Figure 1 (cartoon, rainbow, N blue to C red):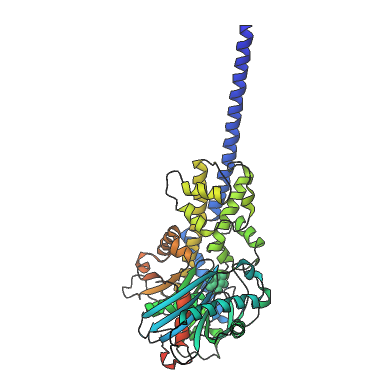
Figure 2: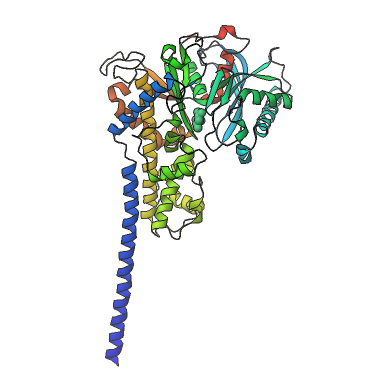
Length: 506
Ligand code: BGC
């Protein structure tokens, strides 16, 4: 009897051991699969400096093509008709309306008549109600006009009207617009999740001014500009060595000063200063050298604008979290390391850029922030530290690629204007060792760059690799505070009907 019991116990022990070993083997296999998915991602996202230089070259080539003819490249290289930037002589009170992302802002700026002398600025920010992003142009502009009216009434309440002239406004509208003049332009297409169909092909300022009339507000739009152009204007106002501006926020874009004779498609237009700011719309840049993954392909196919904004979809804030979400979803489907597949993982854009940054920059030993975000946002709980570390690694791979590609974009602009030390470019370059290389300032704005330290560090590191230390020391990336809004007001002042004297030359 005793022998039988001992035999049964031994058998049971063997069975338990078998189960444990089996579980370990299965779990090792699952982990291997997950590591395989990670490896695949890492390889597909690789951006060695050689590849970045290919992107730099492709960007410069596409810039030439886009300047040569309309439709000559996926890079639209849009004319802005901004051929003089604020110099500091601007004086008076101007309004600005900054529309182009998740929030829109109204501003009132008082300019003092000297460089960098903004006497006061009042700003009000409002989120764009989700339903207006896909509604009608009339609904959207009525909402904007009534917010602006309330703001103006509040600001001017009780105060003497500053002058007899009509109020003037700079409209910063951060979507691809074919400008007809400095104060009018047609919306080419929507980006960043907006889809108000009746507005595509319409003149933007006309729609705003009609809404202003409906709301009873007496105000005229002196300029229509892109946020990158506004940022360039403020950058140049603060520092005359500013030659380009880059936005890396919800969306991404760049603009720079181009010589009039290099803008071949512009011939026939009068450019008084010999230069014009060109809105590159670099979000739509494409090159076979871009490191594309299956996640990018799926994200693009499922987006409202497939085959468009390919560069933006690898770089900007609205998309990065969604790439990470897709990787976690795939890992979750291929193994149970995240527990049962959470239905939250199938919700597009649930993982927004600030959450991605918070997970990536979590420096607590237990990765508490990662744990919290997985729990609260994705409803994934009880994952081991090893799995949390894996999530951080995914964030790192996706962010590093984005930042390095943005650096390559900047490298492309510098190459085009001859400030990359290669001796080429339209501005007549200088060699890498030339101590006289000019100080080159690139104004930069957007939450991904300003609030996400790791992104910023990776971008700087890549730009140094691309340019080399000798050249990189002459290139300064300078954050402009609220350039898209204040820059719009500055440009309104520089182009105001009452300020002919304010015209400054580069
Ligand atoms: C738009 C650009 C804009 C950029 C940054 C992109 O989606 O096409 O016009 O400048 O976002 O806001």
